[in-house]
Length: 160
Image (cartoon, rainbow, N blue to C red; front, top):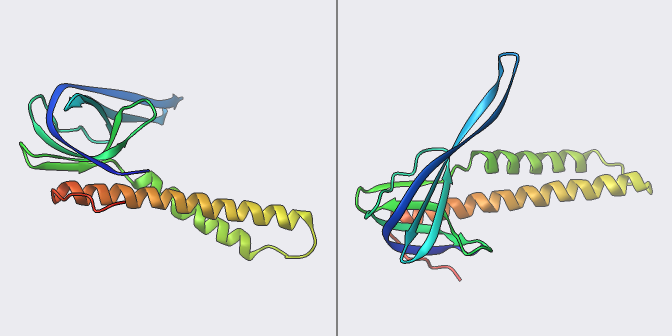
């Protein structure tokens, strides 16, 4: 993922929410996701976050994120230069899953009997996959935190 910076005036700001979850016999959980769409310099942007995105029409914004395959700039972090508010997408799930998968992979590796069994080879491969996927998730956390640092401090990117 290549981190990019966009700066400009927010136009055509639209806020919406997505509520999802389940309930069964009075128990369950419901989650709300805030989705904000707007244009910056003619580029469609989108931020999906747990907290409301505090950007309105004509606010000057500083954004860090990346374009997806559809040409939409997905915002990882923003600073509203008009109000001095800055925020980032949540890292809780990515961090928790990344650490858990790495620990699970290490636990599996430590319990493998490295004999000639194909079961051990399969278990070893699954262990390495858990560690690899966990590392990728932690890399995503690093990118999100880097994006937040950049926008909070109004820095330019020193990335390749």
